[in-house]
Amino acid sequence: MENLHTTNALRLLQSADEFKANLSGEFSAIHGISVNEYFLLLHLQKAPRNRLPRVELAKRMHISASTITRMTAPMEKIGLVDREVDDRDARLAFVVLTATGEEKLAEANQTFAKRAGYAFEDRWDDQELKQLSELLHRLIAGSPASLT
Image (cartoon, rainbow, N blue to C red; front, side):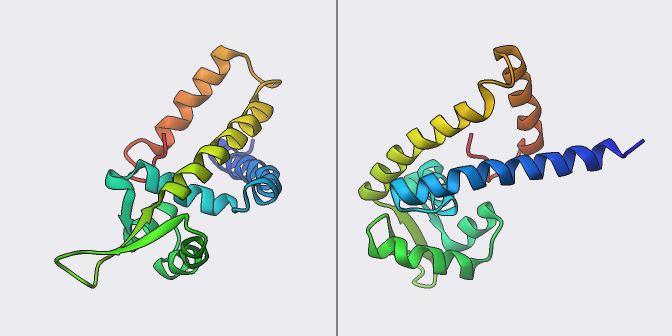
């Protein structure tokens, strides 16, 4: 018998990749942002004062701080995020969600919700969806990166 831990971990990763791949084209075509940029905007929206230090944002997204810098540069140019320097420590830079970024995120949330509906509506009933939600929540409980 296969190890269920391995099987479930692989299925979870594969299903996340599949969902992300299906979402990716639509996000780019309709909203002009990538799925990773969408997640970045979500993290900022959930943060106090809609801002996070670059290092903390990188930690929450499980990527390097230099990747955050590369991601945010074009996002700054189109006004989705801004950069703020701490008043007391000029070495501390924050990534800040702008009003334009909030609008883009609101639009992208509708697409995300539609895609999530497609992924789940024909596979599980409401009770099964609730149980799945509770089980997945246990996996991320206590994570500062939680978006729900």
